[in-house]
Image 1: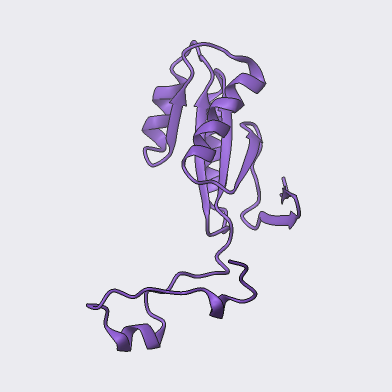
Image 2 (image 1 turned 120 degrees about the vertical axis):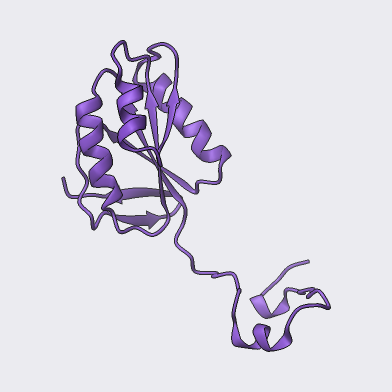
Length: 147
């Protein structure tokens, strides 16, 4: 079926649904929600830089941003320090140093498998500005950051 407008999409509403709630628009999906962006930060024996980077990322005002750290086979206690300082951020451990592309691929695969629309690769020695914005120009997207 070819749909020309949203009004043509059939919607089935369960009988127990409060009709007044439907008319008010409560609990409606936001069709213009910003895309889900996942920032992948690669770490290798650089926990101090990574902690500063993560603190800056947490200040970003982009509403649909998730963060993943990939510890790329660090030989120090980086993973433990990062997990301790930021327990709310997922830290994936590669087990060995897979290089830049191999480490990032772990994060990219996880981000896409968990629903990211876009993946932002960020070096761990950077501190993005809080007003970093996603600029989309089909078919790709770039993250505009002030460092």
